[in-house]
Length: 368
Image (tube, rainbow, N blue to C red; front, side, top):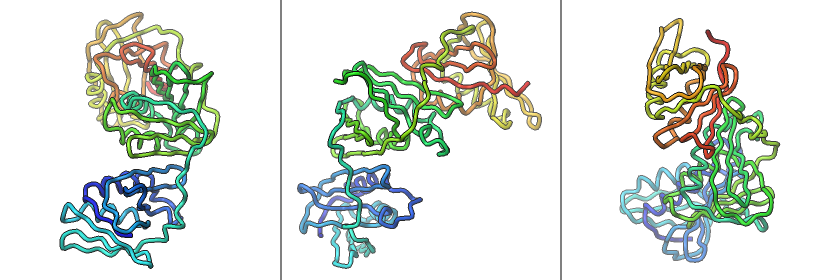
């Protein structure tokens, strides 16, 4: 195989495919990125068998074929090439010669015929969604998924699809994030699948424009996202996702409206002191203010008030500061509501006080 292309195009293609390559794999073939000619373009593919990404870039193909190169090295080398133009050709022993200007690299490759076949979903539910809508669904939920893999279904995000739109939900059992978006989908009944948070985060990073169209295909065991010249396919996670509707509080005793940026700044400052086992801050609502408190026997105490509009009685709750700041860093808008029903019940945060975005945090109850 021999082809020529722009350095920046090759770097973009390799880096996109590399997102699906795992650094923890024990299979050498999965550490590589497949480069091959297809329909007059250069196809770049990466996979770890759970997540697969393919993307196409413009190239001048002099000799069709394919090559498989180590993802880590080809990515670093391409980004550092001295000229905007690159030429790659391969030998029968899978050694690739990459030249740019006066720089020449010879990279030991692997047999491309051993690379896994890119997954294709033959049958499934197909629909289109605006990039900005999908990005919001992911941004507002995926951070709440569990990191530990002891219960795999909690490391994913529930994709709850109906003709009315999409609900995305993530939880690690200590908190829960729910985002709703209305969009027209031709579907009878509902389709509920669990998508790995990692796959959704990669899709979110690939969305360039809010008005671009993303094609989604929901299969029996896989889900595919098609964004322009790039396709992302992920295996679905098996398991029974918790009943998220059941855990959303039906009412409140205390309801506060605050500015999210003001609350974020105050919680981050209080966290500098409140470095106990849980990184706890206490929210105390009274009058027209919200008091943010933190206490550490080793460090000291912190107190800060921010303006708040309150409905109902005074109230307080202790929460892990990180769970608060994770949400406050992604939410936009001028106001959020905080609903409390007691010190041992979850706090319910809503964007603009609506049902479009709901975030629950379990309280910390073993502090004074």
